[in-house]
Length: 111
Length: 118
Image 1 (cartoon, rainbow over the protein chains, first blue to last red):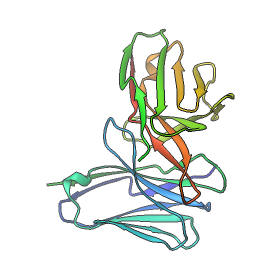
Image 2: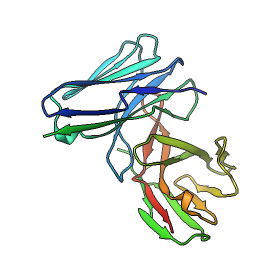
Image 3: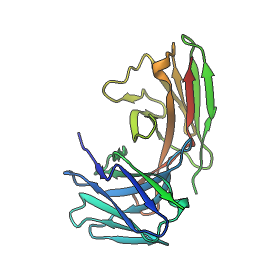
Image 4: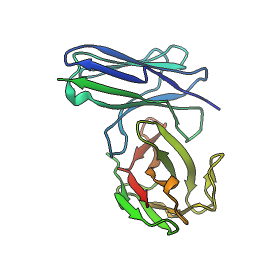
């Protein structure tokens, strides 16, 4: 069974602070995705990283895929209350169509 | 972008009744759809993979006779929770898979269905 561990599990910070969420596995993934989910809604895709060492930026969010394609990180600069939500990483391996979801990070940004 | 809908968005039913949840890909065809279950503050747990025209593949621990999946067309999959009990209360989410222009599979998620069994 492939597992994706996310840390931290819960994070509560003040508006304007920076934060990093980590997603780690012992397995190699062909691609890795980050989602944000708000209560009562489905996950919304933020980014897909495919190449080892790849860095993608989405406004204040920076995503990095590890060189060995086993881990990833999400860095948020100057967090805002609107960033509050459950952040999920999910990996796709080889030709598999199934996503392996991480354990999730519940982020709360206080005004 | 690809849109996936679910119906109903929420349902309350009595214990012992059956509930059907629909998942539709609105602007693309999906040979594969996935059904997930999510408890509060937790991640998504894959229940089954639904393949158009064939039997669904269930994850270990998921009762296939309790959670009936039908993938009748390339745009519709249904999940029927049979003889529902309070412990089946959860948030059920579907996704539909399609290949992107870059050649890798991407899943698009529905908005979820909140099931409450009294």
